[in-house]
Length: 227
Image (cartoon, rainbow, N blue to C red; front, side, top):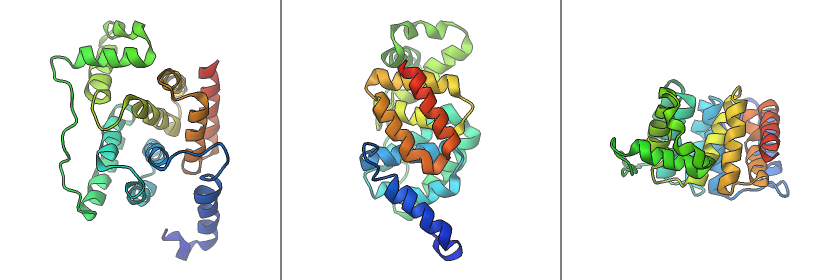
């Protein structure tokens, strides 16, 4: 952390909180790959490009594979938009180049233009319930959601469905202003086995990077979803 030279007092406080107090809090711990997957997703959600650049090498040294990172970044296009996602994709490629990670990575697609809508609706149904198999018929945005967001991205390998729902929760939590979607995806996480306690651990580990207001809003969303 470069701030140790220019801002030593702040660096000491943040280092202790984020890398000691939070990481070691009883009943709030996550395994390293899951923790870094959540943190990187949250940094994308809050637009924390410099912090993402700083954190990515550590994530790669603690269990996150290049494919996991790329799949997380690609999925962000659906929840943050290409306008915010592109800078993170460029930084990811720069870090990979610095670490001699050969690009492009192996393809992870499992759908085609012919079956993406069907497979996407199936993924939605697995997460949110059988009623979602017909939801795509409720207008073109819902059709795009099924075919593009879920058919093009959720069906890819490299991350499983539980991991994809967790990063979606992190994208929504960190950008703020998405409380209805946050609650819906908290429910989706719970349906897949990412229970209330797990999601609270995710929020706890992301808090140093997104701040208290959005973290508390996320906890409130989890509580509403659990009810």
